[in-house]
Length: 346
Image (cartoon, rainbow, N blue to C red; front, side, top):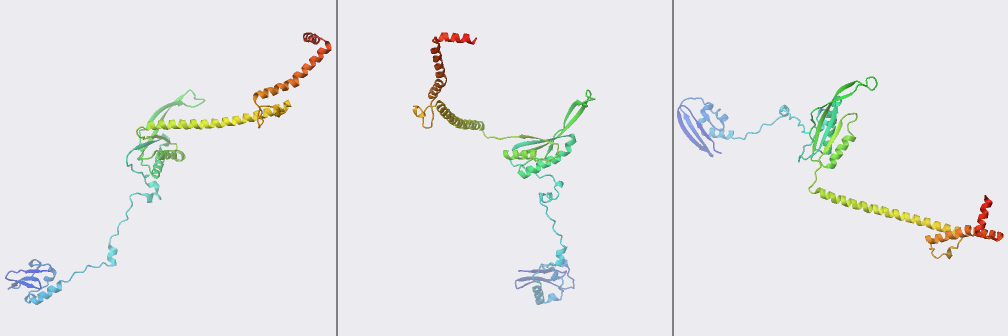
């Protein structure tokens, strides 16, 4: 490290000194003068100001003085008092007031999510008449809270123009029935738009507001949904409808087949029972019949034959025998017998 010193005065000589890599330029003064800050220019001005003119006479004293002043300057150490005097850093409040809304939610507006793609999915309209217009902020705030927790980006409620209507109604139902009065009805509306949300989530949000909304409020909700479909969606829908029709027809055919089978089984059971009854009533041995099955089933023709035999044996044969016996006793023909019987009856 090289240090250069230059001493100035009104009169005198200038001397350059080099020692241990240090060059010094001095001017010897012939008159007694006092050195000031403006009279010297050095890297260590505080140490040179204390040097007197007598000490400059000896070179050794000057060099030793320079060696003493080249010590490193230590950093000042801070005490506990100095640390206490420093200003404390302020507490940083998070951008979202969720930590404060748990304690005092009424002091903050409901949180909302920002849309990313700005695809308009649904529009909710909240309507209330003039006496119940104070309930609109409560209901719309509830809707915003539900949308935030479902992850639906929505806009803040926007007020629409007031709808005014004039209605003429009866003054009363009995005494003043013929007199009428005019009533102005004012409808206040708020609009909330939803973006970038799936169709199922929007349906769940709307159903939740209708079923689990704020109780005791007279606020109506109208929902307008916008559905986005890909190109040629109608053709795919027609294919799906055709497939659905085919599946329905197959299911109906299976049901009808099962019903028909059940009906056939019931009919066969009835026929078997009827055939068994006819055999028993006719008093015929079933082994003599040719068309009888192992289960006891008889064809319809065999059933007719059996019934005919039953009628012949039980009704026709006794009548024929009675007529024959009566003809033998009287000795008359059938025609005469019938006419005589009619006359007797008269």
